[in-house]
Length: 150
Image (cartoon, rainbow, N blue to C red; front, side):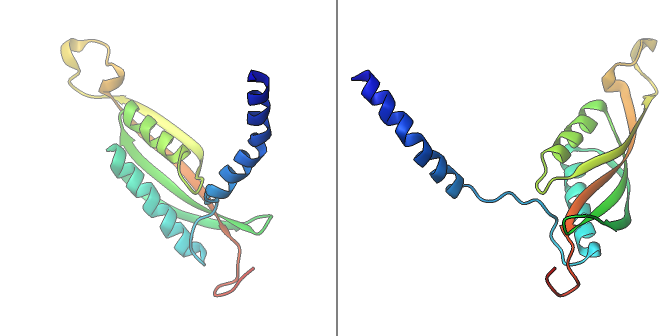
């Protein structure tokens, strides 16, 4: 009786997998926007929201020149500078890693500075460190002529 039950479960597996794939929405893989400028603005807004959510101090965001690529995609990028402690920077990088559509980080530079007035002249802890961070972020958009389809 147990063998028959296990066989019935095994036989239902393909049907269950198919229904799971049908019920999940397709993942968003590209930035929205019909032009590089609109896609860059969308990416900038997403990064600004993430920086605000983790409590980092945003220094600047600069739009980088877009590049055409293969497979009908264009790479849209930003140069970002900010400051925060180790926990804040880590939370921001995690948020970027989990973003949808995917956002890639490149050229990451982190410089630490001890906060003045650390208690009792002891070695500053990670919580006493202010990190100055700069990096590039990239997203991709579909390469299509303005106002048209690829």
